[in-house]
Length: 135
Image 1 (cartoon, rainbow, N blue to C red):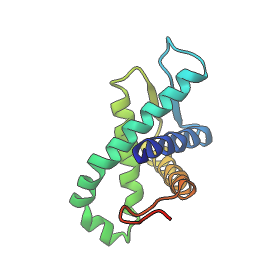
Image 2 (image 1 turned 60 degrees about the vertical axis):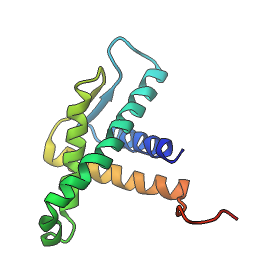
Image 3 (image 1 turned 120 degrees about the horizontal axis):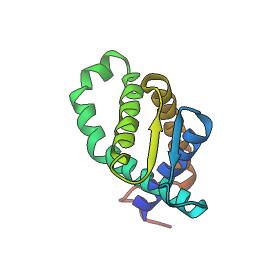
Image 4 (image 1 turned 30 degrees about the vertical axis):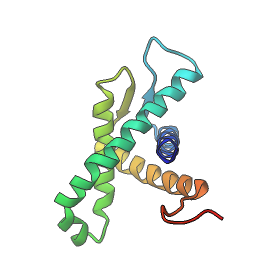
């Protein structure tokens, strides 16, 4: 259940980023139209984004650990932008369209928006420690 909520939060975060930034575009396959196809497109991209953040991001953080230290954590913005670019590249293997026009500005701004929306979404959904007992 938690994984599905994270995919939903990622999908909403990507939708907000695409809505705010003109350089970020997400579209369903050309032969599909309607709200349902758009929602499924965002959910699939949310799933891809969640998998990239779960599998690839820790490896990149480990390899570039010194850059995190030297920049006092600001390198996180670059890594998050790279993760979005990776998701856009992986989406190219699907019928979906996910385009980020300019790496530096659009990807970094999209990463900031996705981070903020994901944080707010996680706070709204709430999270419990695995060892906590429900009252």
